[in-house]
Length: 129
Image 1 (cartoon, rainbow, N blue to C red):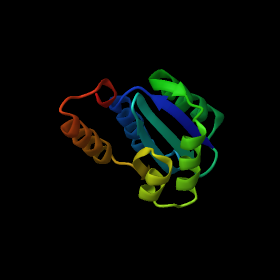
Image 2: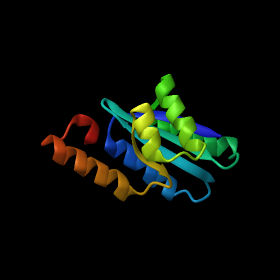
Image 3: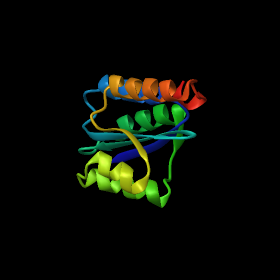
Image 4: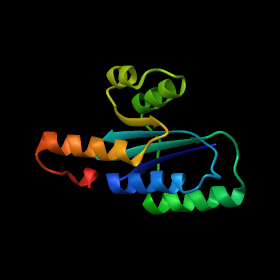
């Protein structure tokens, strides 16, 4: 079971990560966080099935924050490569995507990416708010 969503900014992405940390009953296999110029892609892959109630509740939560996402082929290939165990740095180079985190993301990883990006730009774009 997996969830693939597009979120508008870093704050919403952090809310999803925090929600998953607060739900130890969700059997998360890995989470992939990708930053794009106009938003964030988050893929949550579960180890197994959850009840239809839990699935519905979690989908409702995700739908409040973002939209279900159909990635372009380049992003889909990057996601498949990460799942197959390829090194995130190699995947970033090959598919030209900004992988912020893959595995079990922590709030600090996303915050560090955001701060470094803003520092490099000299201002905070809406997607990093």
